[in-house]
Amino acid sequence: MSDLHQDQHPFLDFVKKNQKALTYTLVLAVVLIGGFFGYSELYQKPREAKAADAIFMAEKYFANDSSNYVLNGDGTSKGVLYIMKEYSGTKAANLSKYYAGISYFRLNDFNKSIEYLKDFTTNAKQVQAIAYGTMGDAYAELKKNDEAVSYYKKAGEYFPEDESISSEYLFRAASFLELNGKSDEAIELYNTIKNKYPKSEKGFMADKYINRLKIQP
Image (cartoon, rainbow, N blue to C red; front, side, top):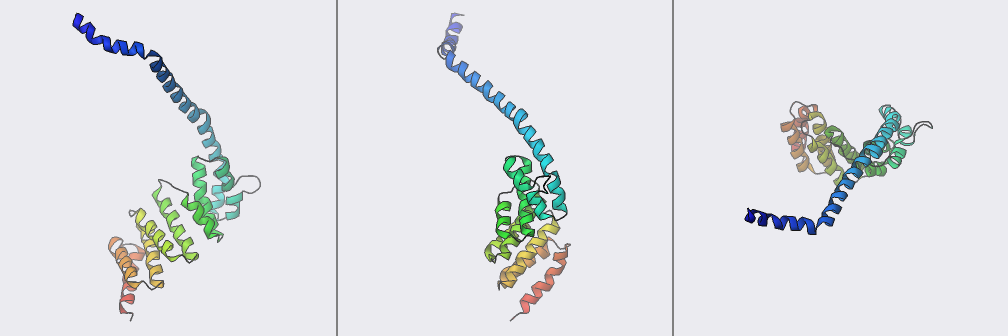
């Protein structure tokens, strides 16, 4: 029994010697956990709810292509530019970047469209693919050919399960390459569309474009 007590002494001695430090550590852990809970429940959740309410009208205007109202509000409801600033860090603020990017594209402000869409991320893969594709369109409008093709490919390859979106943006990349004299790269992409998405509209059309490029002098 004495040996057992002796084996326990080092641990007991450690606790006694470091009692203050261990107490501070425990208190700090409790404070951090409590602080996180307080931040989440008492601050962030109410902000998320307010932001979701604020974006409701902007989403309706977005569906109706009323881009100025989407961005700046209608005088009564707020636009997404306000929501991004007032409710930064919320889901609605992140979604506002998408609405802003698409709206600026519709207003032909391609640089701002790219700026906001680059800062947007989502787990909704179709939406993310459209964001990448719109950046491709914006770069194309700005005559930035390499960037346009890069984002078209990114959009086309991001969510291959969606045949319509994927084939559409790969087709845009191929068409853009063709227009810029890069026939071999265009043929390669048309073949990808034909082989991966044969049942899509663009898959049906691919052979026509491949044959046309192959017979060109």
